Length: 479
Image 1 (cartoon, helix red, strand yellow):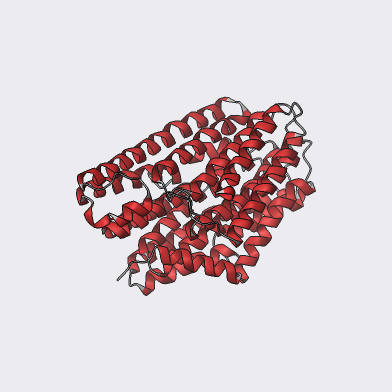
Image 2 (cartoon, rainbow, N blue to C red; image 1 turned 135 degrees about the vertical axis):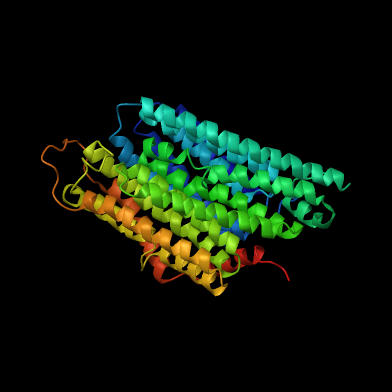
C-alpha cells in the first residue's frame, strides 16, 4: 500500500507546499521537484509492481501502467517547461496554476491505480475541477467563457457516467449478489447481472466518459478550452486527461467483455470514432487559430483510439500504443505552440508567419510535431495508426478502413495548410515584437518528448512491448 499511497499523497504535499510559498519564481521549481518524485515512484511501480491492496480497491494492472507512464512523463515535461514559461508571465500570480497542476496529478494517479469504478469517477471529476481555474489563467472574457463551457459540459458528462454506475450497482441488487462497484466483483458476477440494467449502464458510461474524452458530438468544450488555456495546460488536457478518460472507457470495455455487451459497445465506439474523425477533418480545414486546430486534432485522435477499440483484435494493440504516441506528440505541439504564441502575442495564422526564422527551435519543433501527429514515419503515431488501418482491412472492414484513410488524408492536408505557412516564409513586417526568446527550459522539454516519439517510432523496447501485449490480452475476446 505504501507506493499506492505515495503516488497520491506526494503531489498533494507538493500542492500544499506551493500554496504556502510566497514567491512566484520559486513555485515552478518546487512543482518540478515533486514531478521528478512522482516520476521516480512511477518507475519503481512499473519495475516492481506492488501487490493488490486488501479488498481489491487498488491494483496497478497493465492498462493502468500504460496510462500512468504516459501521464507522469508528460507532467514532468510540462513541470520543467513551466519554469521557463512562467518567467515570461510575471504579470500574474502562478500559485493557483501550480497548486491545480499538482492536485490534478494526484487525482490522475488515483484514476490509474483504482479498480473501484465509483472511486475512479470521483478522481476523474477531481481532475475536471482542478483544471478549470488553469484554463482561466489568462483572465479575459474568452478564457472565462471557455472555462464555464468546459466545466458545464464535462460535469454533465461525468454526471451521466454516475447514472451509469447507479445502474450497475442496481444490477447487482437485482441479481441478489453483494452490491459492489469493484471491477473484479462485477466481472465475477457477470453471468448473474441483469442484462437490461447492464446495457443501460454501458450506454450512460459511454456517453458520460465519452464527453470527458471528447468524442464527437460530445467534443464541443475542446476548441474553446484548448484554445484559451496556456500551452502547458493544453498539453495536459490533450495528452493527459484524455488518456485518463479513455482508461475509463477501457474499464467499461472489460466489463462489456464479461457481460456479453461487447458487440454493442464496439459498434458504438466505431460509429462515434468515425464521426469524430470526420468532424475533425471538416473543422481543421483552413483553421486560422492554430491552438483550436490542435483541439480538433485531439478530437481526431480520440476518434482513432475509439475506432481501434471498436475493431478489436490487433487494433487494440494500436489503440494502447497510441495512448503513448498521441500523448507525447501532443506535448510537443502544445508546448512549442505556447512558445510561438508568446513570441507573436497572437494565435491567428494571419499574423503568425515565419516562425522558423523568428524561433528556429520552437518553429522546428512545431513542424516536427505536425509531421509526427499526422502519422508520418518515422514517428510513433505512424506505427499505431498503421496497425489500426491494417487490422481494419485484415478483418474485411473495408468501409471503416476507407473512411479512416480518407479522414486522415483530409486532416493531413488541412493541418498542412495551417502549419506550413506559419513556420515557413518571412516574419511579417508589422509583426508585434515581444520579449519572448527560446531558452533551454522552454524548448528542452518538448525536444525530449519529440525524441521519445521518434525512438518509439523506430524501436519499441522489450519491456514496453511486453507491457503492451499484456494490456492487449486484458481486452481480448475470450473464445
